[in-house]
Amino acid sequence: MFLRISFLLLCSISCYASLAVHVLGCGGGSSELDCSSYLVNQVGSDEYIVFDGGSMLQGYTLCQKNGHLDPKLSFTEFMHEHIKAYFVSHAHLDHLSALILHSQEDNPKGLYGIDSTINDLREYVFNWHIWPNFGSEGTYPIGLYEYKRIQPGKIYFVENTPFTVTPYVLSHPGDHESSAFLIEAEGEYLLYFGDTSPDAIEKVKRLDSIWSQIAPFIERGILKGIFLECSYPAGRPPSELFGHLDTTHFIKELSSLALKVNPDNPESALTGLNIIVTHMKGGEAQFAQIENELGKESLFGVHLIFAKQGEKIILD
Amino acid sequence: MRQYVAFFRGLNVTGKNALKMSDLKKTLESIGCTNVKTVLASGNAIFTAPQDLPKTLQQKIETELAKGYDYKGNVILRPIETLHSLMNANPFSSIETSPDTRLYVTFLPTPPESHAIEQLENFSVIHTTDTEVFSVLTLSPNSKTVDVMKILDNAYGKTITTRNWNTIKRMVGAL
Image 1: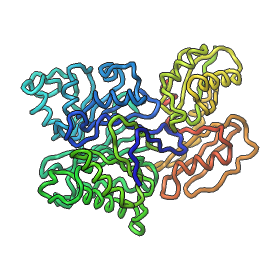
Image 2: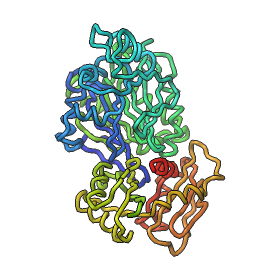
Image 3: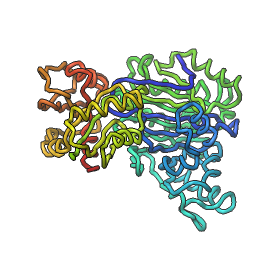
Image 4: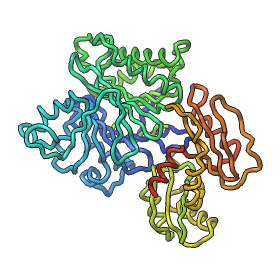
């Protein structure tokens, strides 16, 4: 079962404000207007954190048009008043380009990433060659963005927000590192993946290790959703996946997760879990192919959602 | 003038009762409350109010929120001293916690006829008063937060509201 609608409300009784995600961009880099960026808050809160900054203004404007964000606030005002921190999964341009461009209008805040991401930002992006050094390291740093080097598996409190974030390392591709972030507020969790190769191709157990860690969260009902990339339909040779999941590997990875949650009955182990598909590459025809390939599977009972730019997803 | 703490039921848990904390603050100020602070986004406010009886004040707040934001929940008001007495009493002080432990305080609008409650694995009510219920849940596949909320609603009705003990601690920290 899958949904692709402009507003999603997935709710049940709780004593916590629900986690919400505004999709500022979710494409796989094929369009400059729709690249990965996700704005996360608790419903009712004006404190947001941003995961990746591929396309921001386009998605922000669409969210305003769709009634999900205050239409009176310019994006610059919104950045100043409401965005408390950025988390960058890896320093590829489709996860970063809008953040770079808007940095000249931004105000000071933390920019979080694993060492390899921060190193790339310092060496190749905010370095006075590609762009002024708005970072806090490297040559003549302006210090607008204070780099926060975060270590895999450690929990970090995000200042001025109710959130904690735990990073994990992903492969993308080969030796290059990407990352996933486990986001928590008031004991409820959301897992966001940057780009990732399948474990089977990289001969590693990075995804497997994440699945082991979050399986108990699913059993206890406190993981509210997983944003996972699926860049291609099935049928590509491994050499042409370029560090991404296709539908075959996407399903395999969900299978690994289901087996960890309930090895006796994996078919329904993930019942009701929100899986948000991101980073689809190509055009409409390829998107439809991916949706068809995933949509025809039962996928262990998950609630499959295809991210759409300008959409607000409430997870509960 | 008197200082109160307010707990709003069901706020921001579903899209139907979505309300920005900045709008909640404005609403409270519009009816004469001052020094308004909100804590987290689950509907927790601390403010100073004119000398109205709490019931009048509660109705006023509910009416304004319904009018302005289509809020269909209810508000439970307590004098600010409640927060201090909760912290001082701390019924959870002897509970050994793990990452799976959830400590809940349920606020009741009126004293219940009884505290009879359904059983749930890994869940226990450890203390009750006329206006509060203190409970402990150890999360497991068969015992989730949502299960506890249903049980509490079944026992005490749909005008109660429950908070994690950490939320109460944050409110005390905001004073």
